[in-house]
Length: 612
Ligand code: CA
Image (cartoon, rainbow, N blue to C red; front, side, top):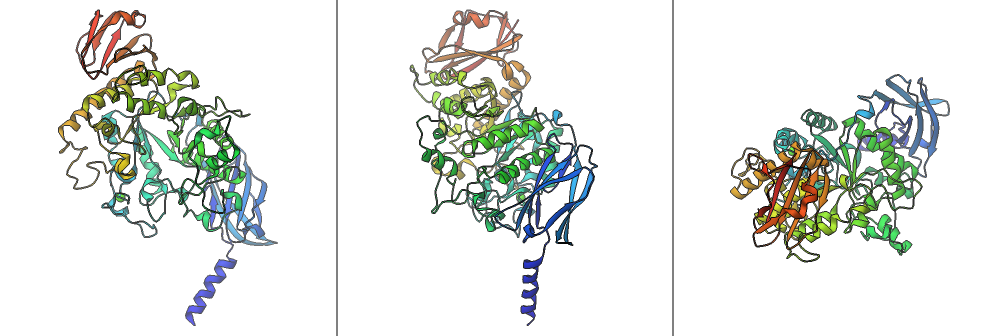
């Protein structure tokens, strides 16, 4: 009898409780450039209720209903004169107030113009939060979360968290990187593979196994105090199949739905291919990324607003130094243009890097500012991931030199930069969480590895290191994604190798780490290596020479990709050497007159500094 009563009360609550279960964004600010805000309200039968707000400066412009009566969208206009504070959203059933929701408008911490995003002066460090360091073992398992920690499972959760990152901010400073791209930290309450973070189940909540929203804000602030910017990894193309929307979709067109499971063809080329079929384009952008990752339909204007506001909310709330947008080509491109432009309207000096994982320069360049897109509203997307240069660098030092192979791969790729609207702001890398680690790709050959690292940290673009890459951490994609994402040595109590405290790291890896640090120190101290003009010379006989010059100072990087020592005649490079009087090899104490020849050891990249 008692059970029936309890059930009855529960049922009554489910059916008649008009309590707003969710209002998102959870709060907002007064004084944003865009004075409009659209609240998404989720509550049982909320569409039957009338909405009233009585607060000076806040006007209800429109209330929208959905196919599903459990949702409403409330369009607000928030005057810049509005007083910071809380107001009530009252929900009426005819004349009876059935619910009240308290909504807060906060004061902006700073003017948007002061919010500078990452740029060419930075070096980015990508890390996977579950695999970097476990700073708080108490959050490894959380009752409400489906997947529990299991460090013995390569595809399981290992317990890394925000506290682990916070604890080691000095490691990044000492290494010489100035921006952290952290793989997604938002809730992934998925039954398996939740560690990578790309199946988001709540866009407004940090995964409890990483920490709280406040922990994230605190970590960003602490990083900022050490001049380290935090780049948030966001995903607009899809969500996790356990996202709360999936239990009760606002409308059928919230997701792209098919009669049977339909996967994306992953062919971003179809989007700009003049010969592409509409079918291929549709499958590219509407097909699901995976069973666990339903495809979001950004053509739905309410979802579009939701995502745009979500990104602005995180920038403003957490004081971000940049966004990395996952699977950029897979989302609706008109929406992506609108999103990027909305972010730049609020934050003109911000930066976003779009993951454009394509094979060629032309296909990649398409996404940077939509140079070639036939669109009324071109995008302000400054920065794309430079996969073509990554592939070139991974080939170059393993190949026999020829007209097209070896260091010619670098030359051939960079010579296509005219296609980009701004190649200097490309994010460049040798490896990331999805592809072979560079050290493994050059079979742990230190000479080849040093050539790659020297190229990465001296050519044009914004360099990015992938955690562990600074000391030749190995990993092959053929062994599964987990092999690319092993735990950072020293991130867990009791680790036999501890990089943070320089304990038991094999000698070759110590040498590699030292080499990376010295290169970063050089780059950080010299604007010519960050923003200087790149001039390169056609490779010949296995050597490749390029200069980075800011007018006052220049660097000459001379690579010998072959198996014989080269005595390099410098007269060939007179055009770039002319303004300078003195030279010194990186590592040498003093400058001397520019000689006729320099010697390049086999398989080496030698850096020379030039001054007037
Ligand atoms: Ca933990």
